[in-house]
Image (cartoon, rainbow, N blue to C red; front, top):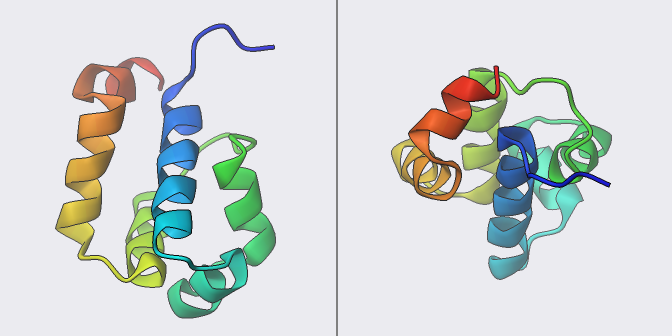
Length: 87
């Protein structure tokens, strides 16, 4: 089991929290954001090697929040240095 959460773990957890708070299913986010539902599941679970900026933009669309707001939440949750150090 992982001791320290990585950026990808924190990001997946954040995206899942936002989705659940908005009462959206993975399928609803997938349909709106044009992302495969299985990929959303893997991201939320921290099981992906990397996440592209395009995918984050698509998540914002799927979650129905402005992209800049999502990026602010990501930086607040994950921290700027965690993002850099994890890659």
